[in-house]
Image 1 (cartoon, rainbow, N blue to C red):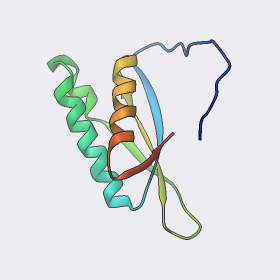
Image 2 (tube, rainbow, N blue to C red; image 1 turned 180 degrees about the horizontal axis):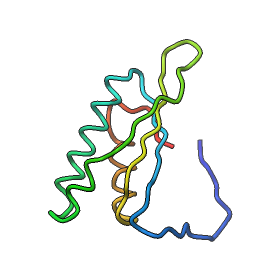
Image 3 (tube, one colour; image 1 turned 135 degrees about the vertical axis):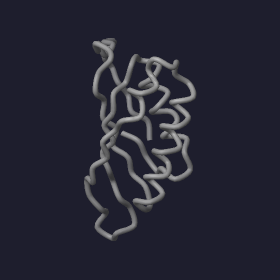
Image 4 (cartoon, rainbow, N blue to C red; image 1 turned 120 degrees about the horizontal axis):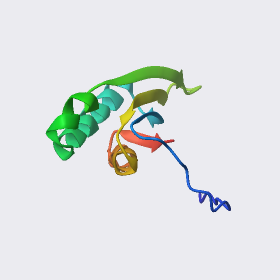
Length: 102
C-alpha cells in the first residue's frame, strides 16, 4: 500500500514538543519491550544534557482487534528535534515486535 501526499507543505513544529505514535503489535508485553528497547537506543544517541528528558513517556491502551490478535497503544513522549522524532519512528517501525507505527 502506498500513501500519496500531494501537498508540498512541510510540517512545522516548535521543538521540543510532545509527539504521539500509535503502535500496533501482537501482544502488550512485546510492545512494551519494543518501546523499552527503542528508548534505550535513543538514550545512547542523545547527549548527556538531554538524557534525563528522553526517559519519560506515556503509554496508553487504545484498543484490541476484534479477534484479539492485535493490540494498539498510544505512545506519547517529548521529542527534541525532527531527527529525534524520525529516529524514534524508524526504530519503532523496524522493531520485530511492532507490526505498524502510525
